[in-house]
Image 1: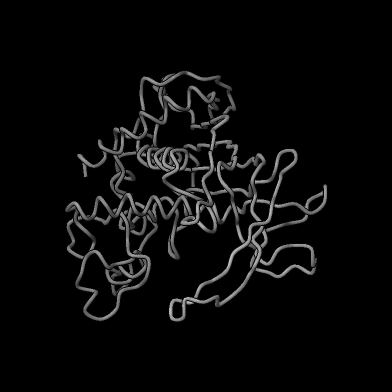
Image 2: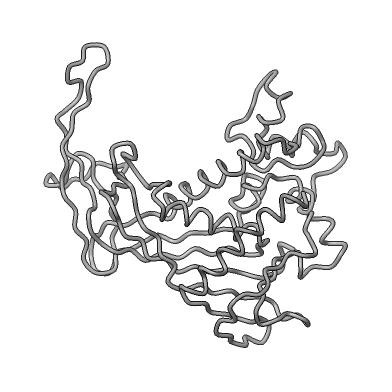
Length: 319
């Protein structure tokens, strides 16, 4: 499966701040006019500019996805340590000692090492099948992620301003550090894109659910989330889906990778034959010889997102 390209989803996003936003730079700037805590910057053909790193976006998306999937684990779904199925989200850090007996403390690389046969290495099929739901999307040290992000660069002018603060000592109730100034973004539009390749439809559903949570203000970006910073809107301006040409692929459907592969490969990777979203808007179709490209508007994507989110429940029932 990983050596072929069955499908891909590209979402073109516009990010706009609804509240002050700060993605902190990890380096001190030689420019004395910049605040103590400054927005991350980079050089472009048009000069130096603030931007939102793709790594910051990926961290926010993965963190929320893991919270959702761990909620499923807490509701009684089996974990890999009890050999009854895979966990929906592994632990972030490696468990040690007696914690290894707790099925909710495993992480995927650790579990893969634990089930590794003594006489051979795990195959790519075994690695994918035994990874948790989060690692199947975002990857780990043994598996490449399916979802990639690009940096978000400003479109037009942006506006930043300085905020001021101090750090209070909990012991003396006096000023421990400060005053210091913080640079926050208050106005601007940023364009970015994300690509999900060789996806299952429930993975599209989790991606859509994360975007909904961000737009509802339930998930924030960057520094100072508990200070009122970080609320943004992420608008999908266009969605592009490419799928391999296959007989029986209807105009109003999107197939996950499980619907493309043969029965033997489907079983090896733990995929589902009914990995499909149906009764969707048709979109604009382009023939690319090997692939079919379908382009969807913002309104059409909203319909697709609702059906993709509903597919998560269907996956749970089949698990």
